[in-house]
Image (cartoon, rainbow, N blue to C red; front, side):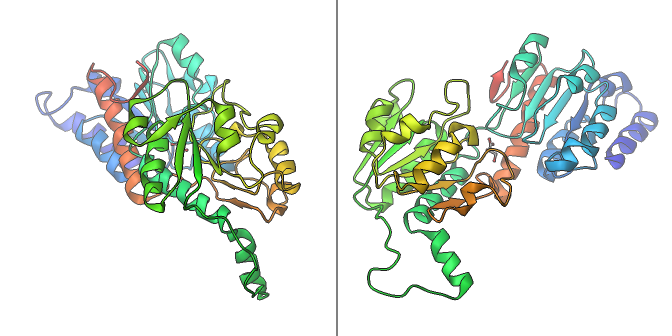
Length: 354
Ligand code: DGY
């Protein structure tokens, strides 16, 4: 952080105004990056645009994010024109208050923006961008991983290997085939479409999808638009790839789980709160459905003694959908370019609020 601030200050002092932005413009263009792990590629975009880049020295995740970094951000944010929100933690009203009226944009380095205090940003006229699309391939790869892990009982199998007690035999630890099965995709957006494209090579029998409306991409992908109830009743695999909203919160609950097939496998790469986890626990424990694979839970991290983790027919990952080197870099560059657009008076590339 210090290097960027000092470099910007030195440049402002030694260069005549014609060699870069005059100090007043630079002050207007202070960009705060909320976590120390924001990729270099994103920082470079900001530096190349001559913004005063201020980056916290702490992580904006977990306990550090809630405590030390929160305090640090409250100190750093006054006077910022843009905030790059690198976190899954909620964006607080207190932080927005401290920023001052010149804050024009919050660019979240995530596709999901349920943690971004959208109504508050809207009421203050602050723009919000996210990073959709660039992460769809990586998240879809994790969805496919979860499909295979849950269908082929990776939790039980790994446990056997770790214990050194393998169940060996012709009919031991048998799983479910992907080949010939029916897949129900809840939300045929960028991620849902990428999941269908990847699964096409697995000789899937049918793809169904549901959402607010039929999509042209559905035809191209040979996926059939149906109501949620029909999708639940017919699918061998149900993949959740929708954002978390008031409408989708707990869309998978005891009622909807009751509509699923006994051999059904639920996969969630959206947000933990799409699923009522108590109801999921009961359905998995009572073998009302076959298995589940989750990349997202409530809370995150899931405590290691959480009852869900006692289930052998559940495979859980620690929210790593977009966690590849290339994808995180692409997300950083997109977030930074949204800031560039707004500070240059142009339209956002990927707007949530514009
Ligand atoms: C997102 O971008 O919303 C992902 O869940 C982060 O991994």
